Length: 154
Image (cartoon, rainbow, N blue to C red; front, side, top):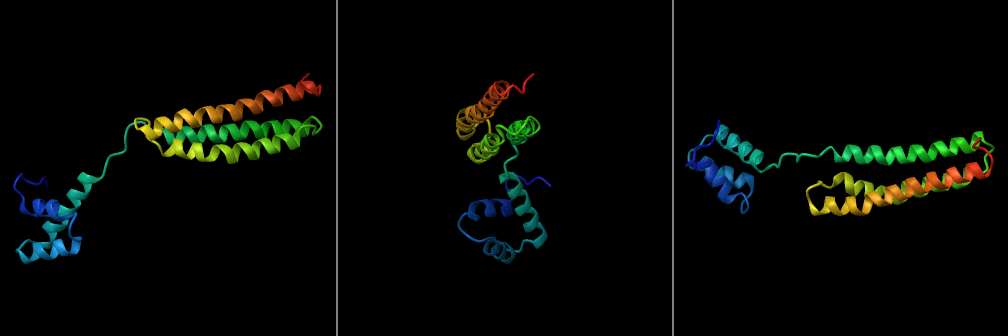
């Protein structure tokens, strides 16, 4: 049920919800002769109006975590390649994986929580994405060079 423009229950709740507790407002409305069911319905409608809808682009969180774990998987693949190829650079890649997971977690978390339209989202993307790319790309480049230098690349 949509509230009318001059609904006294809705008007009273909106006018007083920042000053008084829900129980105090309810008691005043009951004392004024309003029914409990109408009061509860009004509260639900007002809470629903005040709850912001998820903004478009909220799937950013999913994409950020996919990128984060993809990067960890790529570095882990170099650990496997190192074991198969003789283990020459395994300790480096384990260290790289730990550094990647530790150093990129907070930027990834900030990007996942940020909304792409807000300043925080833009800042997280500006700072976080280059850090993720640097750590993923740097590890891949170093690993590729190390593998070929060790004669394991063919």
